[in-house]
Image (cartoon, rainbow, N blue to C red; front, side, top):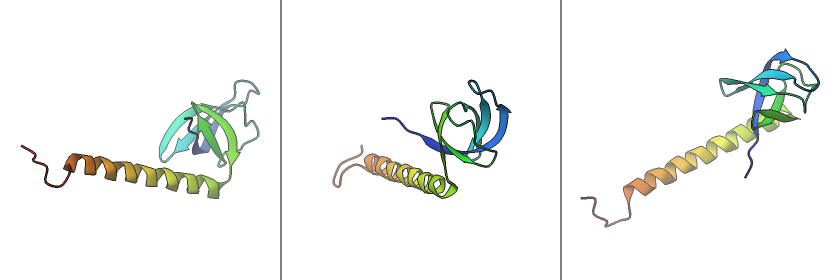
Length: 94
């Protein structure tokens, strides 16, 4: 499965049509991303990034919704992991 993560464009580094690069922020973490697929985005715009490549523009509301969904998935996985460590009722942990 492929996963595209929304991030906010913080700064353009190079606007070359083929090799454009920008700094994109993902929840406080900044990464350099390739921007050839979205050359018209501006600083402050949100993009969907897959494998270090911004593949599309996304509006702020959709970006926030996706980030909330990712957070909920993470919480569910942590809860399931905690349950796995508890074991089944009546199981001895010696």
